[in-house]
Length: 98
Image (cartoon, rainbow, N blue to C red):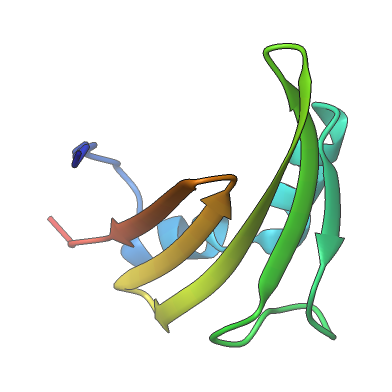
């Protein structure tokens, strides 16, 4: 299954990319929603192949997911891979200036 979304944003591409890759802020948002987030990298930013281990409750069960940064090409694309149980995901965010 492939899901695609398009959103026009009235902001410079560099600013949008910086917001989408503000990993500290995204981790804090997840923790406020009850998700346990554990970094599997050192420093402020992950390198390719590094990421996060997460634990959360979904539909009454404790679940876990591993999220890996697969590519990072500022300010154009960022791609993540994920695995939770038998489900594998691939998320690619591509920015195109208007």
